[in-house]
Image (spheres, rainbow, N blue to C red):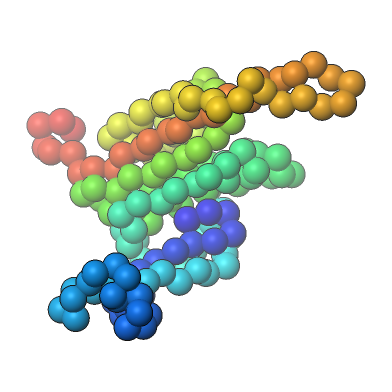
Length: 154
């Protein structure tokens, strides 16, 4: 689920007989297909509460934070992801170039039961722009968990 696109399972039909043979799936088994929908997550999406198990935002938060109403839109995006995720096992994965101290404020507004920050390994030594020094690009994954808390934890 991104700023402009969401995915949701809609069908369990295998596209054609050839595809079924290639992946060795019997008639009784099914593979879910996905549909893509255009939308603006900062304005809310037309899906019921807790309708997703997993949401992946690849650089979405970084892009939103470049806009005019960036902080408000970023907060609303995280809030909408929280609303859409299943309360028992929902997971939000955010891929970002920003360090944890620059993103933590957006993860504190909702009742996430856990947040994990992972610095991702880099394949290159950085990017070079004409007339500038080489700049190392760091990437992070933020994993946010939405799980129902037991009465003893509250």
